[in-house]
Length: 431
Image 1 (cartoon, rainbow, N blue to C red):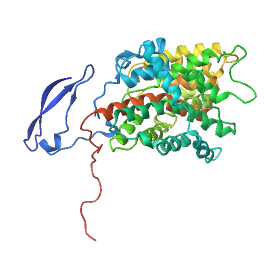
Image 2: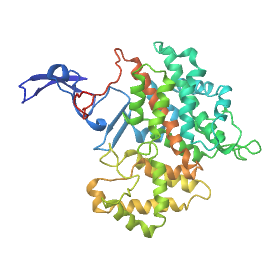
Image 3: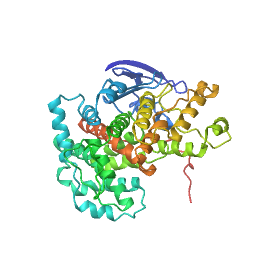
């Protein structure tokens, strides 16, 4: 990382000071304002942290103008085409793609950590049957520290590594258990002979009287491929709201399970992890192709509360690179899964996309379809219930969360996060 200086002058006081201009490997330079208050008697004001770098990280890079997403330097399209989710998880957590033997060891360890403590079943049974699965996820993940407290010395790198592996391994098992609890079905244990995504589908949908695996002894490879792809695309996305929440909680020295539970809570918000569910609701509200022009006009009307969900992105000012990949996967899934090839919602989505991309308003605003526009349609085709959509996001994003947590905990001289504010209340007054 190269360093230059930038001089800042306060014209009202005449104070002047030099500040470091930091440059990463690639990307926009940043001004190191950590000494701004000391040197100039000022703080910065940046609602939503739109112009603030909160940390240094070597994990994920985004160029929103060019529509670029890199995991550890690898373009997302290459990883989506050539890797499994656990290969990507290893990359995010360890910095490099593993050799075949190292990857086998990694996946074996994930399998070893997949089982839940049997006492957790009673904990899960304590939730009402209609509890939202994300509410259950927050509680269950936060409780893991009560079951695995013997390896919580965060000064021990091996304890940190085991905690990260444990969360990656257990998240799909917890997710499936939450779903089974909500429908009153018995829990299904993970199996060592199935891959990560196969295991999840089996834990979700198998029955004691009828295996999810078909007569030819395999789980539909189209479904497995689609799930792998979705998990890869959602695995990490730089310093988004939930990842920043995990990092902020981690800065206090909280245990990793509490930090990830905080991240799950942040992801639950409809502006973050709930966006694909909102897309599906929007498509159902539009209903038919002939109603698209009316809803396009509603979306352009500033006085109308209706918003076109799944278009545009806070970071990408070009096409979301994940959307390009997932659009193709949508076709493959809906053609490959029996009875899904003529899904009316997908046909409606394609017509909506076509209409919006040819509308001057959307072209001018660069409102392109994002990854959420298609992911909900795929989950629906895989028979994932709508209230589980954000849980699916949670499973995938766990790989990114634990990677950022590991990176942060390994850095020396960590300080507790403490944003500043502009006070707008009363000046001092007496009773």
